[in-house]
Image (tube, rainbow, N blue to C red; front, side, top):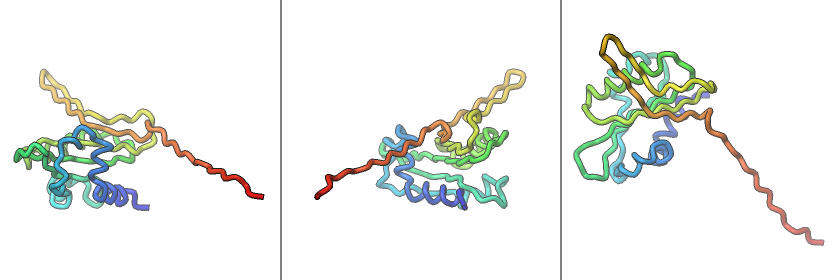
Length: 160
């Protein structure tokens, strides 16, 4: 089954609902009357070169704000299904490459779909001789959420 393709389609087709669920504060600021622009096709060749040959779920979406400003926000969404030691470093690279190209604010969301209870890749930190960098981003860990499915049985009186 092509899970990457399913995620990409889900995010594309239900983008407004996606933002409402995973970034409710941002949702309130977005002007959804202006169509969001999915940029990944043009950007992946230049920005995300290390994924060559792999199917990607990552989405880079340009949205406009209700404030009416000429400012726009890039939303970088990354779906991560495997526990990857360099995941946070890769998130930093994507952030910087997107920022360098567009010089716009970026909201990064990583959906962690792996089954590890301990993998919480939500920041990258590096420090040496007084020079320090910390990059933090939003995560949603599916493993932490309880999926409750309720089956409601309806009973009707039996007629004799």
